[in-house]
Image (tube, rainbow, N blue to C red):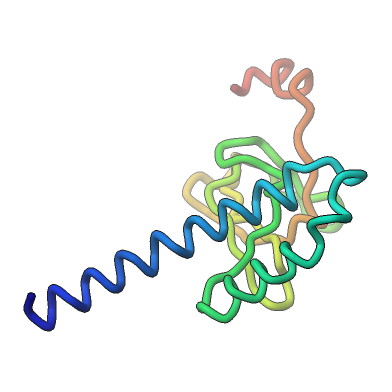
Length: 128
């Protein structure tokens, strides 16, 4: 086995291991009902530590889906479909929203600044 092949094999094994840890964390912490989490708190904390120490980020469950219509809650108006997701230290859950009025224009907002456009309202406007 060459040095490059060995490096690739180690990288693949590391990625697969991290995916398994992240999946286990997801099952334990996000999908388990709150009243059943207590026995698994230490295990979940260990998984979080492994994930973070490997340089990965634990992304919170997303409030909005890609393509879902949202609008700003306060201040200047901005409405349109979600086109992307971002996460920073200050904004753990943020979205890129394309304007319905200025096609191609995108603004980024924290999840707390947005709300979903109710489906009934979207239907009245003739939007999908």
